[in-house]
Image 1: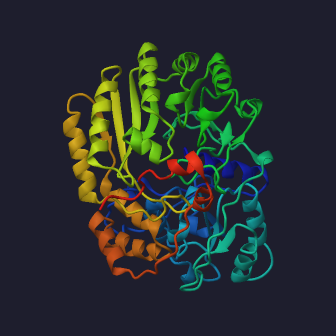
Image 2: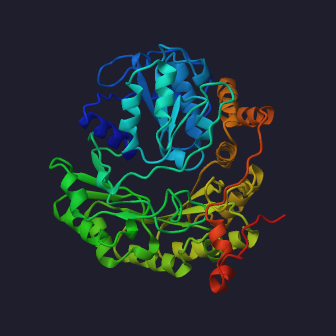
Image 3: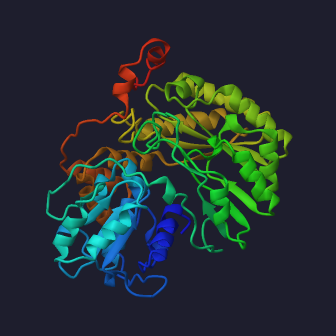
Length: 482
């Protein structure tokens, strides 16, 4: 319910007169590992308390690869035929979309009748119009798939359409904004709104990087998001891929806190923190400042085009301490191509230095190569190797820094889902039915045949044409050591 995309589509469709209700995967069915099948239950919509299976069209918002398990449980648990190819004339039409479509939505194709790739604001009402038109179920699905950015799912066994370029919503349909304020969500009583969309930066691991169909930053004048905030909203979340790059962000935050509201921002860059900005964030309720490093050493940040330097993080730590914040949190990523033990040693040394300035928490994810990025197809570090790397970091920082690592095992499964084609969806069925444990997923992928695919490397052709210093910068190690 705290997803801005989910709320924004809900708002848009209802405002257009297209009656739209909400339904959610039951909390009890969310764990990654779960005995399945559970006892079937009626999954009811929030507004009408009607069974999900009684609706003619169901839209699925899928954020990232591991949510495929939730798709399987939601459909099977509510009595809807799981595979698109098994549905009949009276079954709901399932339309898939969401952030996953910017990288690799192939794993969702076995379960959806239609896939809408990219930003849905302009296209989804047109899809629904065609689905409500003349003809039988298949004819209406095929008619909707004629629209740009829309393809059919696996409505026939083995029918896998090539993925189109992600759609971009016209600027006049922006910004996305919350439809509902509730105290019972992850971001309780917070009104979410976009001050911008997209990102102009070129971090090589990111599917929202500039220069791709998903990337590029669309900046909105501050009056547009401010005009959407309801009087009763006491907390405002500014959401976007690169909010801290907004030229007028300081003025926007100042306006919000001057109005007596709390404020939260989806991403902060260490090199964009200023005394005035931090003072206003503190007035807006911030106690912890979170920034991202991603690469664990200066060399790795340069290789990943992260453009955050050691001096930026040190300066940020000093400013955070001077303004009395409780702690500093830094997002890190281990296992990027070319990373070595020397980079781990540098992280340990540098984290201890920052911890001497400001109380520090490090959160760790394990690198997962994503489609439509320059690092597409790069190998996964390995679960044992990632766990050993985390052990070395933990020992090196014992008692000095709080660590919050994500599981390398589930990063490995995310990697397999991100790498494969639609066969991954069928492997996911086997894994979920076996109980959804890590070993179940590994076994399912090992037993599922799949076709190798050609890599698609973002803007590698552009890099190949570069000369001089730009070309030299690209020669930093990005291939995993043997």
